[in-house]
Image (cartoon, rainbow, N blue to C red):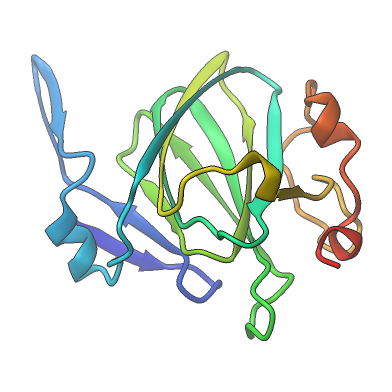
Length: 177
């Protein structure tokens, strides 16, 4: 596995090995020993599967008191995936990083606990699988608006569809109060 550090401390891009031939390909999606060697020792307790159509933006989401680490993979389609460091006292607090993730390139993005997450679907359909280090708790969920001026996230295209909740999310500073 190839491990690529991003500008955000602890947030890494992983490139598992994919073996292709005329039949298709084989790839291990998760092997604890490999992730441990990459410095990811957080137990992963829940898998989430999201299917979305082109132009959907999901985010920016986080858990307030039970921060989730997330290992994000795309099984079908392509997304632009964004992490925002919301760890108080972090040298990269309030900074964002985006990666293109797709079914055609074996890449995963690891967000340690303390990051907000969102993604924009670029293909007709995208299936996103993400493993989390904490169980989801609806009462603990927080969010901020995807186009917050203070963050200035450079989304590759404008989203076409958001949930009502995401469209009404507060600004970054307000959400973290």
